[in-house]
Length: 109
Image (cartoon, rainbow, N blue to C red; front, side, top):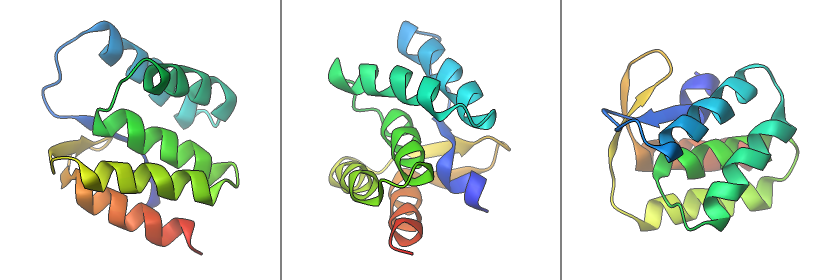
């Protein structure tokens, strides 16, 4: 269940430069290369990217690397935006606010 919470991509996202970078970051996360994933995702956030998949994956990296406060801040940012239907790595649909809520629960443990 934890992987469902941490690694999500937008449903039917167009193949843009941001989407391609998301795939690079996702592959890095699945290989536990959190440094590479963080580099990709943090650069997107710094460039103004606010898509839930980017924020949630960066929050997951922060959670995995012991930075719960930073993760919670990103989860709250996701919750402050529109709730969007997302697709998990397994293909199952889930709402962005649900992922953020569950992520905050994990971060507080």
